[in-house]
Length: 344
Figure 1 (cartoon, rainbow, N blue to C red):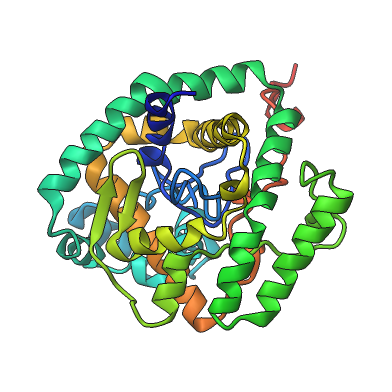
Figure 2: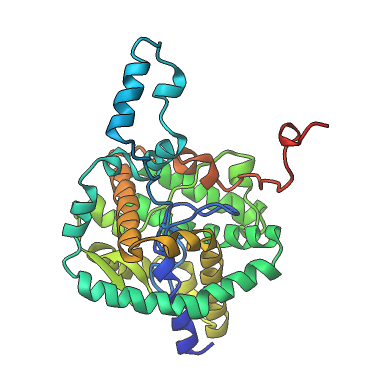
């Protein structure tokens, strides 16, 4: 593969970014990062592929007059679970991004961390053009040609390949329990999962998956916030994470594959696999009033949540996220349920 072709493949990061979780079939992944996390650099293994995640659920606006009328009509009515329950979408948003991201004023804070917005918008437009012309067609063809179980095996393989990178950064963050669990997952899946194609560590041993990279390690060491930066081909970052990506190269297993054709083929397959997990977000991105702002805010919110989780040591693995982001989410059938079928 030529350098130009590889560069075009790397443009998927313009839609993938970085993320801790992998997307499930028909689930959401990192909105352009936002999956997760996507690639840190061309040679880095997918530590957080899929940071592109769903945007905040829209809140229905209620007219003041209607609200007042309803309040008057129901003033004496007892409160019910339906009147006080929090929408499931809002619960999911808080689980993904943290409670801070659900509060007002967060968008202004993200805008303040984007002083290079004019430059970033130009880079974003370039990455989006590469994605539309190269990566999205490749991802669609990949999904159409490859059966679901094969794609799951490919995702498992690259997730397992990124475990040494996560292990090293968890040690640097001073989190021995998570690092030992990550190393254990890597050994179990490599030996009993046929090189990581299968995931017995999760299914049989219930071992958590922990994501980590050097950008998050730098945040753990004190570099808590940083300016937003979008790089050509590599997609959303912060200045801190761009510096951290350099450190990740030394711990990425694919860096040490000496055969150039094999290494480039693996990187290309990895990037296509990451992009295929983000296809469900294409409609959301296309309908956004400002795709750049959607991408930046969702990515920054997710990244900030991961950094805060690292600092508070409350990372519990993927099980802390909503069910639809879990690897084992069952595929929904297109057949109507028996209850929904019309009765004769």
